[in-house]
Each structure stands twice: as C-alpha cells, then as structure tokens.
Image 1 (cartoon, rainbow over the protein chains, first blue to last red):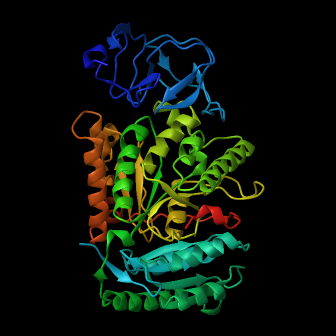
Image 2 (image 1 turned 90 degrees about the vertical axis):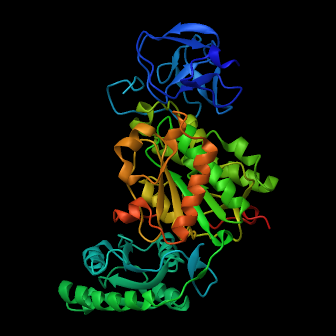
Image 3 (image 1 turned 180 degrees about the horizontal axis):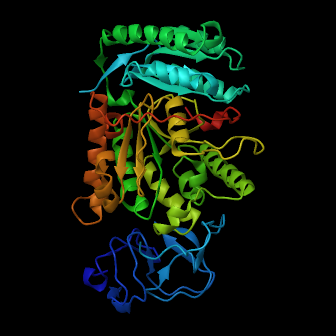
Length: 106
Length: 395
C-alpha cells in the first residue's frame, strides 16, 4: 500500500484489517485519502476512532488487529466512521451512560 | 544492577517495607494512623469484611509474605471472624517479624495506635540494617493491567508493554497478564500460543467462564469512557488489552495467589468459580493489582489511555501513558509516554525498551512516579476459587 494513497493519520494495525484507526484529529468536511480514494468526512473524528477501509455489507465482521471485533448492523461504505451506530459486539452488548451518543471527537 | 532483600523461601524483594494489615474495616482507622509513623516504609493493606472467606485469608497470607514485605503488624478489632492466629503463624513461619495489636484488648484507639507505632518504628529501624544481595532479571515477577482504556491503549501502550514482556520473558522473568473478562474474543488466538493443547483448552475455558459470569451480571467489562475514546465492542477492547501479553508462548494459567513456578508468560484467571455470588469480579483496577501481588508480582505495568493516577501498597506501579494528550495533562503521574508513538516521535520497540529499562531501574531502587506521590491504593473483597487443574501448569 503506497503511503500517499492513505492519509498518514490513518493507522493500519494488521494487514487484513477492514478498518483504519485515527492517530490524530480529522476535521469536519476535511478531504482525506483512503486507499487511493478521496473521502470527505461529514463529522470531526478524534484519536482512536475507526474508519472503514472497504465497503461492508450488513452482518459482515469488522477486522482489527487481524481479528473480528463484531459485526456491522448496516451497510458501511469505504471511509465511513465505524462505531456504535453501525457495529455491534458478537459477545456482550455495549452499555453506555444514558443520552449522548459516544464516538464523535472530544 | 538490581538488588533485593532475600527471604527464607528463596524469593527476593525489591522493597523492604512493613505491612500494617487491618483484619476488618473496624480496625482500618487505627491501622492507617499507625502507618502514618512513616508512610514511605509502612504500607496499609487489609480486608474489610467481618465474615470469613478462604480467598481473602489466602490473599492476606500471600500479601503478608510478599517478597517486598520485611515485617508485618496485624491490627485486629478483636471480634471479627478473620483467622488472625492462622495468618500470624504463616507470617512467623516465613521468618518475618510479626505482631498483633488487638484493639479491644489494648485499651481502645489511642493506646492501640501508640503500641502499633512503637512496634512499627522499631521494625523500620531494623529493616534499614538488613543487607541486600544482587538480584537477576530471572528472579523478577512482573504483572500488567490496564485501566481507563481508550482507542490508543491497544495501539501504543499495550503493544509496548507486550514488547517489554517479551524482553523480560526472554531474560527469564515470570510475567503475568490478566482479566479473562477483557479477553473475550481472543480465546482462539490465545489458545494457539499455549505450550500444550490441554493448557490451550484451559485458556479457552477460562474466557468462556468469564463470558458467562459477565453475561449473568448483564455487563461486559466496558465503561462509557471506553466508547468516548473510540472503542465500540468488548472484543475490540479485549484485543487491545491482549496486546499487553506480547508474543511469547503462554506457559501457564494461574489464579490469584498461585505463584509462577518458573520464568515465562502466565495468564491469571481472576473470575471467581461457581455461581455468581459476590458481585463484580474486579470492582476497580487496584483489585487486580492486589491479585498480581498475591501471586508474587514485584511490580505492575499499568497501561492507561484516559489517565489513571493510582499506585499500590507494597509493590510499585509503572504507569504507561497510551494517549499523548493525556500524557501532557497528567505528566507527573506517568512514568512512560507510549503515546509519543502516535506522532512519530518514537517507536513501539523503543518504548518497549524504555519500559524494560524502567523495570530494572525500580529493581535497583529508583521510585516510580506513583511511589514518589505517595499512592498506596489497596482493595481486597470477597471471592471464591477452586484450585487450578494439573493442565494449567505443564512441566
């Protein structure tokens, strides 16, 4: 994977992964390169958040560290933010404090 | 060069402190006041419950005979059901000076504090005269935990701790990783690293037990702050936590209080056996640090993303900041900035080496940041365990 094809803020942890991890802030509306494709981010995302490295169909496993971290609950496009709104555990449901959706940049 | 205090069981301590142990919450205040005579050298530990519990008894025996402990003062109210006589015998048999102050027989709070302080002061003076001996890396037991995890924990701090573990194991040390409830989703890749297939099955079973336990409680080991930091699922958090174990073969599965018989990498199963009885297995990070110490850990690597400030009684904690922004905010509490990996200032390999070097430095007498700041957190609660089976420690 040529480095210039993907924004340096996107970290690939294992070669077979279906997500990148952000190692820095990406701003709302910013254009970033993801595997050679230009993606515009609809919302700001901070350190540690995940972006899809490829399109995923509902029910597909998400791979990070070379291992499954859950299944997507809806279709995901390349460059989409992957978090609580479209990824669920295959083990124990994730419980959060009431109200605010987690995941946006803080 | 590391140095240690040699104990009669052959183990060596990297510290030589007096443990002041309360045997029920009712004796906690008196114990704390006694330890106040020299907070650097007298550390408070204890068990708050009044009902007997074999696990707590074993933990207290192991902690009071931990290699970092040179002498023990037991502080009893007098009517609690903790077996103070049995504990005192175990400590005495280890060759350590031990004394019990029983508040109901000593005239109450003030006179108990005065009696305890006098004994502890004398012990601290005696311990200061004890010679040290050289200590090898192969004589170390090092634990690792993570707390306040975020999306950086699994990509900086935990892999760096794993690299440090690989270096320690290669040098002959015993290293312990833990929290099977935070390894849900890692069972197959972990089982493949076991030194025997039967141990691999034990590792799988321990994670399955944790999954059942947490399912009964209705929660995974996942806090709202984890999701704020970018983690979505328990298995994602697990894989990040699993990175702490490094790449070494897994030599055994132990439970709290089991001491690794030789060097190598060990998984500690901290989830109680049997039906769910006493609530959450690990109510806060220090409960896990205490269990590491009970299994002989001389020190604990603590990887944190959101930013924990804790240390521990008895055995130092090395705090590894996974998140560079948190490191900037909580610098005085952190020993290692693994977050620097994210902006390219350093590499995981270099951070792993820095952690290894810090372990050696603490074994040579340097204090960790939490030690300098006086952190001596400690917590021990009710649990129950069955002994490990023969497949857990292959020879």
